[in-house]
Amino acid sequence: MDTQTKTEGKIIRLTIAGHGFTHFFEGAVPPLLPLLMMSFGVDYFRIGIVVTVFSYAYGVGSLPAGIITDKIGSKGLISFFFFGTSILSLTVVFIQGYYAFLLCMAAIGLIGSVYHPTANTLISHSVRERGRAYGIHGISGSLSLALTPAVAALMGARFGWKSAYYAAGLAGIFLALYSLTLPRDYRREAAEGKPDIREEAEHEMPSKMFLGAFFISAASLGMAYRGIMTFLPAYMAENFSMEGTNMDKVSIGGIIATLSLLSGTAGQYITGRIIDRKSPEKIYTLISFTGGGFVLLMSFTRSLPLLLSAICFAFFYFSAQPVQNYILAKHMPPRIRGLGFGAHFFMVFAVGSTAAAISGFLADRYGLSSVYLSMSGFFFLSGLMTLYLVRCSSKKTLNKQKI
Image: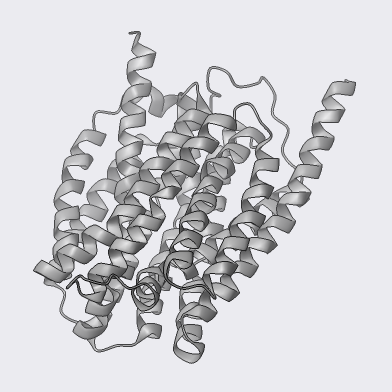
């Protein structure tokens, strides 16, 4: 095994672990929602504010993180991400009030925002089979989002809601130490903006209309995801019964949400395998419209049909992630790719974060089913934007063939 292959393996292992770790903080609040409401004496809207503030910070920091990645590379930033979020996660253990928790989650979100632009840029510069790497990277995030509701709910019900954060903080310290072993040569190549070993000699900057359509589609799916996920465990607990068990609603909601989200790993794997060979823009369009249909079904189904609709939603939503990353890596010049990923995750997390508070308001006023009815519209908006991406990509391909 040559040195480059070993280094690629280390990068993939680190980003797999990092993607799972960062998405724990996204997925931990929803299954703990009843315990948090009881502990702090707040309603759906207040917990929605926590998720919104966390997600907004998570997105806002992505943009400068992407710019810094283009300047200095990924190694130092990834280590900073692991150490910072781990220490803050352990700090949660000492929190007593709602506003202290809100501030701590904002800080975790801000430091956590470093991960996505730096890790995705590192993969695009350093790994030869880019589509496969993005698929595997996405699977780890999906598994984390799928397993976190069940793990956090069961730990919260048994040991208190702070126990999940304590366990995550200890695991994060280990990952932080491992991140220090990342080879320095890849950090230097990223800082110099060198293309990866199979990169084209020249890279045209995509048009403003193309980038606008892409980022609107990303923001739309980000809003849909945030609104859906914030209340998925509570919605499942309210509309899915497990007769013959003595489990509390917190545990039921977390476990059912986990079962539905596990299908997202299959979506990540399948798209990761095919986007190196098929049109990523066309795949993106199919994902957006089909996923929207299943979210719409979630708004008026119950029991088994609701579970099946949630499973299909998760499959298509998480399928979009490696496709989005691949499209950016395909169209953005290497020297500013970090900026592209930073802007992308700003749209997904910062703009998308507004849906948590909106969904909390809808849930309090009209019931949880109204959240899923409204969020399906964002999927369809994304689909309309991706139709333009398909048109631009097809036109670009046709022009290259003429040349």
